[in-house]
Length: 417
Image (cartoon, rainbow, N blue to C red):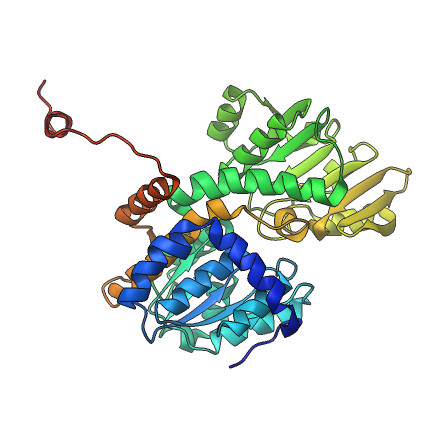
């Protein structure tokens, strides 16, 4: 079995981490797994995945393998891999190419290693595997039955591929499932991004001015958690008038980044776009401003501008880099501008990843069952899967809800009173 990780001897600790995650992931690690172990819906299927190699991802990979699949996994970020988890997965018979601190070249080689597997189904987080298959391995992409995409950035890239007519296989936007984006993006990133900032800096959020760039589900969650942690003021910057209006109605200040730059203590980007914080913003920031990113790629805080403005640079904590400007002001960049929740902390809590990865597992099963029936396009998670995930989650939590009576159903289906 092929693999490339930091140290196989880390497996015992990784196994404990996976055990902890699976205790809090009853859908992926129990309800869905138990059915798939019996039915083996993925028997003989090759799955190539580029995902954050965390204890939660491990729970999903283990379920797919128990369902009969052969799985090959690479990291979707050079700094997010939990090395002990990677080792434990290898011991479980899952092929892994991932370690924390990979170079860009190593990162891309691991993605190509997944592509060389010639997978039937591909799973991605950020779109790098989808893009690599289409740009570097089109002969492999032609044979792929279907794929899934975990995050907003990847869905944006897939949508562009579909629009340009280059997408070679059906892809399911797992990110857009209600049981993913409303919980993972909002509550997961909201908590874990703030957790990453605190772990990296050990600063007090209470009393600070927090600037959140973007008010999608991720931005909503970060703003909500910052406010809950006692931030003196939460400012939202936006380009979408509807989202900006929603932020105002939710009780936040809304203004352009150029104005927010002058008053913010902590800046967290969550847009999926590039150069959201750039030269003209950095030039106006106060001494000691902290910059963090919750978007998938390290392009939202435009690091070339920060480098050009600085006269000196030093690492003062494991995930804190100080940039000193010509006038003596100091700007602090967290986690090299990468995903602060995964680089400086542990990523999303297992409970929300349970729903996201339940969608992944069921979407993979759906693609296998519908092989050849779906044209190359970007699809939403089937509503019945989305609804099933919510139903299973409530069941796992021991929560019951009402059901419509026959009379109520008839009333809702009629236009007459």
